[in-house]
Amino acid sequence: EVQLVESGGGLVKPGGSLRLSCAASGFTFSSYSMNWVRQAPGKGLEWVSSISSSSSYIYYADSVKGRFTISRDNAKNSLYLQMNSLRAEDTAVYYCARDQRRGEGMDVWGQGTTVTVSS
Amino acid sequence: EIVLTQSPATLSLSPGERATLSCRASQSVSSYLAWYQQKPGQAPRLLIYDASNRATGIPARFSGSGSGTDFTLTISSLEPEDFAVYYCQQRSNGKTFGQGTKVEIK
Image (cartoon, rainbow over all chains, first blue to last red; front, side, top):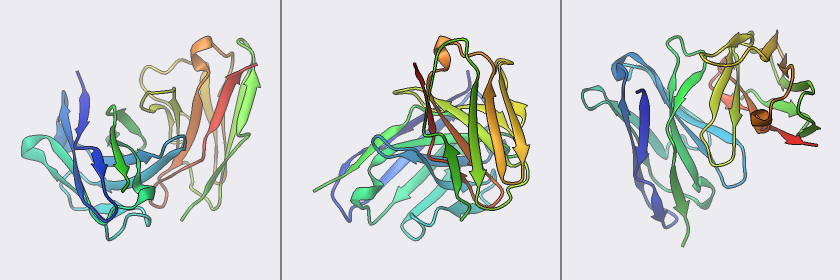
């Protein structure tokens, strides 16, 4: 079964850091680009970051550029999001999502992990 | 940044009716547009990619059309399980989502 499982969410104070992980199974992880997408409480979806299969290409939304770092370990079938200088507006459910082979759409999603930034 | 504007914000329809959802881009995205469905407490599900291609396992009642700046998602006859929030997303320049259209039961 193709599956993505996020972990690492929690409560953190403003200015703090958190590292999210996404464990992939059931497919050849190293062949796919991956994404982080977040959803603030009661709000819509916001793309956060993408990374190509070999980590050659990395992209960020302007809202997180310079604060978040995406990375992957293909040997461990894992995707990561290092989040620094967290703000209240970063509070959201964070999803990892797989791109289709040519990047047409995000066809596999995890269940999400919740990040709450509050003092 | 390319802004996607979805309309209407809410669509109130009855089962069996036809739903027409719109997504307009602030600049051309060619055909690089996808549609997703999200139900409460669930992750999004890919419905349509590259404007008009149904994803694997998506019923034929879902169809997409458009190119450039104007796109439409049509659900030909609403089933009870189709009442949800729908998002468009572009990949022409970075990635952005629209704000969503809620399809609710009338």
